[in-house]
Length: 338
Image 1 (tube, rainbow, N blue to C red):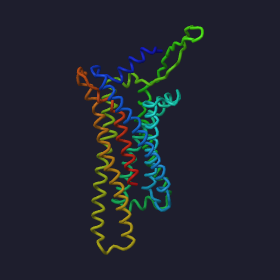
Image 2: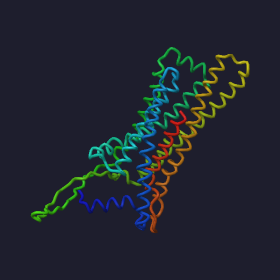
Image 3: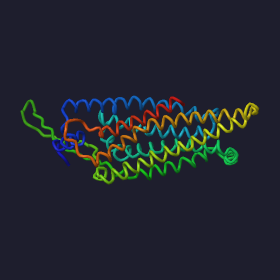
Image 4: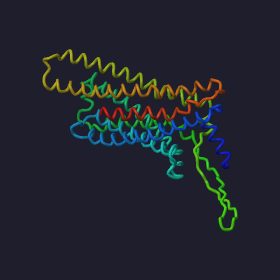
């Protein structure tokens, strides 16, 4: 248990590690976080949720009945889960929790679910590229594999490993934060009897655990492992798959030429359309995730640097809100193209 004074000191230390910051710089920091991590995230997030919900019925319609579009449905679902958690956290941090349940739900479920959903979304983008790669570079084998089988079965063959891996990789997230109950003593004076009464109120807050603040954990898991799993592997996979898809489409169009039958031309146009959708999603994914990875690298660099002694706010404290901004931008941009 901590009293109000202890809570204030700890919150100040966490929020403003650079003690030389002026009051004007602190106010600017607060305003920036409120509008970017709070209001901006809520507005963009709600827009993304509405748009994804509108896209799902279209993607599962008979007109767009394909494995590619059904994978897009799950991509939209994972995106919506991530956005929903980010919006709830933006409300909790910048406007105020909706109740004690809001704080506990974030600490023991929402925080972890957000990490699981964003990793699932990243690898679903890779799955999209893999599915197109197999369909275009190995059309005969691909056709034989899906012929006479339930298309949802193939989709679930992708979804289950992605969800299981994302959950296992993010298991340490369950030990990164904790809920602390703070006892706040309020003094009230009765206007009639002028007697002083004291009331004890309990306030719940979220704080990082010792594991989350451990330098080795920050470097090896939260930065290096994340860089490899959420950055290098998806980026390299997407580049390889899309390069080979482009080469295969170019060779096929050259072989068919102007004498292609109507059926072959229609299939080629459909492959080109899905490849164009995939290329657009991948480009937006790459561009929007570069800032997230760059900000992620800032934390381990800070570990080996000297603490700031001059005035100024600490940019690393903007790591989480700006990372979420990049991810939400990717979600909305993919939605708009769809």
